[in-house]
Image (cartoon, rainbow, N blue to C red; front, side):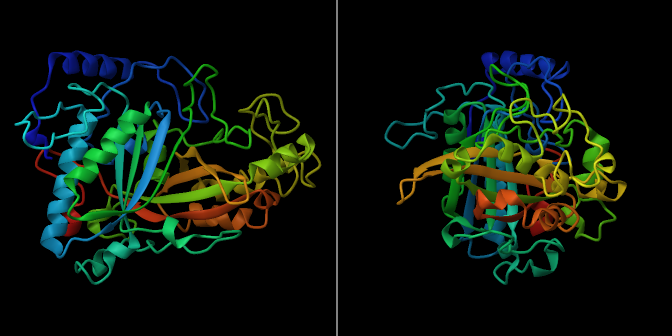
Length: 412
């Protein structure tokens, strides 16, 4: 259903949305790695921008979902129409447009789970495309981002085909599960003739500063996750490390987009829970409760590895030391993290099926995620985690103007 099919803006929506925007101009809760501050009221995240706004929107909501699809469009024209419909519906759900009413003899135009006036809930949608979209079907092979490939098996991976790859990926965030489900169903409704669901993972992740405790969220191994994440409100840093630039040798349409890694990482939590605390902290290189680097007092203290060349305090193979060696040469390898925890019941052996839906954005896969993966290959943490799905994708540039749509420069 396009935005034209929905009703006009309501007074309640205008007032609530204006309050959210006003709150957003003051202090907000930072991303992981920033000290928490006052949390603004939920808002309608703007849809338009040079980049997709859901990649850096703050505060980070409490719920997340990633859904991969196979594209069934028969030709380029139909693919173009799909991107137009997807963009119209994304704009509509992110802005809280109320559903259009019609004759009760027909199915309703939305699920109704958010009522007649969808409330502000920090809802955002990020649309990304996979390498397989650039095969022979649509004549886009010469427009593929130069580093976009199908995600290979990396160290310790056991990728399941039914949970891996895809032509298109939707990443949806909001504060409540019903908002996430509403958005997913609306987006699927508007593209039902073109997109077939391939796999899905849903979960939660207290954004920094949210929840009763606030602060950096913890993963399901109990450690703070993302202490040194990039500051999403630092535009200069985002241009340097996240957004594809005009001089990167990428197709012109890709400028303003970002390489997205989505990886389903299972955590063997029962095994981890039987591991001594000293070993857990040595594996990560941090104190479990405070999050401080070993030998230091505060979560945000910066370890000086030059003063610990033999790994006496923080082991040479500790996760934080391998992932971010903190040298001038490794600054360009930093990535923007924005994932969430998931739990999917239990497996046939009676073990909990839980873990991390890892999501990162970076200007370059080779300089970002892949370089970090090379550094952590063989780390002790591999004994407790396993990559089981996900894929490499390219988050499309943003939409700038009411007559534009996501992917328009790609398919034109």
